[in-house]
Image 1 (tube, rainbow, N blue to C red):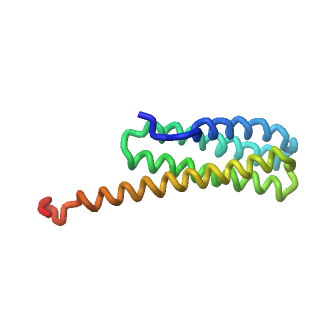
Image 2: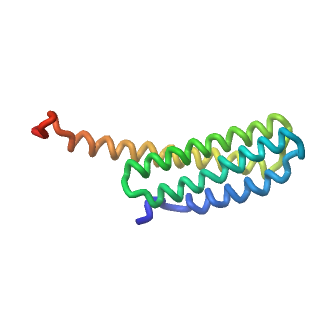
Length: 135
């Protein structure tokens, strides 16, 4: 069963590929290497967690995996902004990645929020009022 609607799977895959390309533009020094490693880890993890969420067995697991993907996208956004602020990267490609990670964070935030609201609505209607299960 596919849970992720629209093009989010493709967008997060493309994001990972773009991160791999832009990392090659980082300076060949300690700063570039460390930030490059961080970007590859978190930028690649967004799509991997979206894929895991898409195959989640429960709604709660789906929300959890999407939450992890959101955190990884937020971290990717941070490292890209740091590259810009520190002057390690610049240009339209960087701006496009910063915008894309911001959009992915927003999409995943909405998915997590709506899924948690759904889970909370269903939890309260099915919750027993006592240990014995009598309402």
